[in-house]
Image: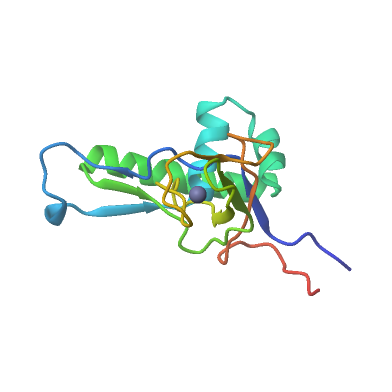
Length: 157
Ligand SMILES: [Zn+2]
């Protein structure tokens, strides 16, 4: 019997991963951690307007699992808004499976960096600023993520 492994596909990384109420010092703030799959659920369902069924398919998870993720995500966002807490989006229990490729136009050096680490400022080889993505699917990064507290059964390889 093989059941699907619990991979949650994320279509794009959040542009900003930290939101805080204005005028309150960071040290005084309580932080809420929104996981990247929760962010993705909000993006697909609330922002892009997908039905839960479709959104679940896109994330490669069951409709029930999606339901749990989006419910948890809504609660966290609501708590941040109502209680004036900071919202931090980060992996935590997820695992990035892919990398982005960059190329330097000055020295032709190419290198990979993991998703979620931000765009490099310069070429690691010559420190030139003339760098760009080499991936064909710019702007739509497929990231496979694995989450521990998922209810799915893991299949053994
Ligand atoms: Zn270079």
